Structure formats: C-alpha cells, structure tokens
Length: 159
Image (tube, helix red, strand yellow):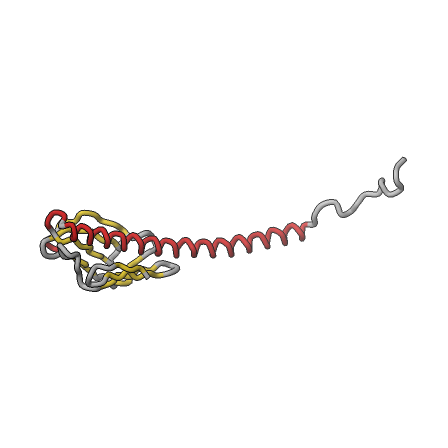
C-alpha cells in the first residue's frame, strides 16, 4: 500500500540557479585569495633560497682561498645590470686580472639592491687566511629581501 503523499512531486529536487552561482562565486573568491597568498610565499622562498646560494658561494670562494687552491686568491664579482649575476673567480690581484671559474644568474624575479643598478662589487678572499674587506650584498624579490654579509675574517651571515 502506498502512502497518500508519495505521488505528489517535490518542487525542491536539486539546486536553484542562484544557489549554484553563489557557490561558484565563493569558490572563485577563495581560490584567488589562496593563489595570491601562496604565490607570495613562493617569491619569498626564491629570495631566501637565492640568499642561501650566494652565502654558500661565498663560503666556497673562501674555502678555496684558505686551501690555497691554484695558489691564488678567490673572489666573487657581482654585476647589477640588465640581468643580475655573479662570477666566482681566482686571481693573484683583482677581478680584472683573474680567471672566471663559474657564473650564476639570480632567479627570475630576484634582483640585486646592493650593488646598486649599473654597478659591480668584488669580494676577494686573500690566501691563506681567507680574509676580506667586510662587506655585504643585498637582494630583493616581489616579496621579501635578504642581505648576505661577510666579516673581515670571512664569517658569512644571511639576514
């Protein structure tokens, strides 16, 4: 036997167009906010990773100088130009008379702020002690910035 109401159609089967539009709008808003947040995190991470890479290359150049590799001083030549990059080099005196051993370009979206646009900076670690002139290099991205400092005794810090 059937119930008396089973043959009456239910007008609420499914969603209205307004409900579907509201759900889609909320989803789009949440997705765009999340995209902006996580995109910013990625750019901040790129600056952090690039800062750590420069610090590691400072340490490499200093280690080579302390070890007296090729019986030369070792350094890094930073170039802030159309595309920012730096070169690890060995030398007896300065960058101009040195030999470039490696070239590294900054990650897309990361640029030098020190040295300033159009300028270069050399950091040379003198053998055998690995000493240098106290200096720093600064980079920035869309989100975040980092300064890599080197003390006169070759201690390296990333901030």
